[in-house]
Length: 300
Image 1 (cartoon, helix red, strand yellow):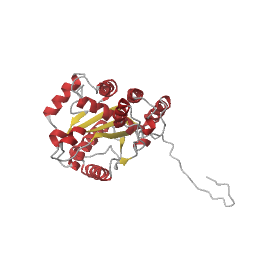
Image 2 (image 1 turned 180 degrees about the vertical axis):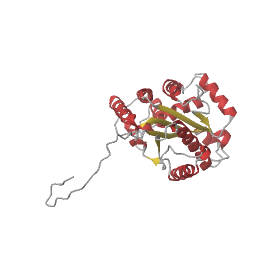
Image 3 (image 1 turned 135 degrees about the vertical axis):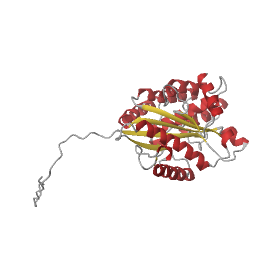
Image 4 (image 1 turned 60 degrees about the vertical axis):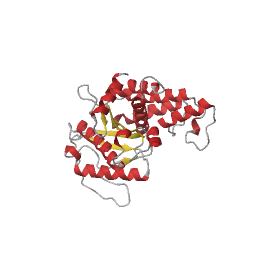
């Protein structure tokens, strides 16, 4: 090899011409809905009856396609491309519009005041339909019924959720030694972010219940949701699933249930058609809660 410069230096370089196969890489995007508080009060329980984490596992080769299509949807609905619509915004916007009240400047969704609730619902529904366009995708849902589990510490519950997610990713990718998954989550609070980093590191080093996490990257990635198409969609998945959990027959949750049925249910991780315990997992394990959930899902 030669460089065109006043001083010419020669290097003897041997190139390996053997074709090298690329390592299959997967992205796992995870976000939460609701909250968990130890010794939860009746008032808090009414606001947050469940703590949910939704995780979307996909081939990284399809990320660019997903990103482009979601941006196109934002343009279609005249939503700023670099902005984020959270599931929690929808019901707040609906309440302001039903009461005919102008959205206060302090609200993070003030930029959406010219959009109707129904327009935003249609946007979210189309975003979730993008999941069906992916060739490789699996959804993992973990949830805690706060009315049955509030005696456990927050870090314990978070550990249960994260371990369930990591185990399922590892089991899905372990068939090929070269597979590797990178897990991304949305920052919540300084304390929770610290818990998640500590728990992830502890689980990675210990291996949890499945010996070793050899198909998952060694560090957790916490990234801003408004910069991440994957986390935005994970937020919608968690929100639609919360509609199923909160449902008691037909009611205000019908739109979320429809989204769940159309775009989420067909893509939940399963084993021979069974999603319970494989793609949907109550945390901690509880037979009654699982049976109640099955009844709700069978009913839709």
